[in-house]
Length: 158
Image (cartoon, rainbow, N blue to C red):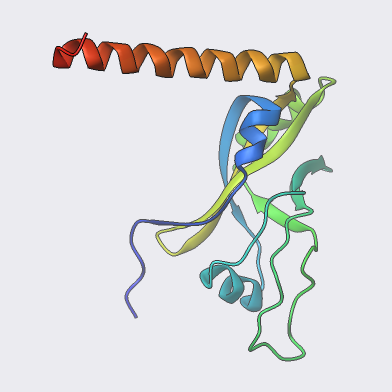
């Protein structure tokens, strides 16, 4: 059987980029059972309530919902069980050093397949206040308006 090439996005946490300011991003593998992989290949997962924890020299993914595989038998998995993340030792040390700070958390950004392996992109993030969110939205809209005006000027419409 030929291994898959490229990336296939399974789930994305769009709200995380709005609610948190992202400081550092890591790509991690996951320890999964067979039915979890089959459910992910079907494109079924949710990162909405997901978070990651550093415990005893390991990083764990919690709260991520991978639904039960429909064709599974008694070997099916629990939908919201804790899943161990596979990272290099230096990455784990970097994460441990950053998570010690107060107000910093590990948030999953996306879950995808890369060259046939299930990967999760986790970020060291700091929570935003509501006024920071409004400021980010205003900044994004002003950039969009500036680009629109530059494009119109280039076309000779203004």
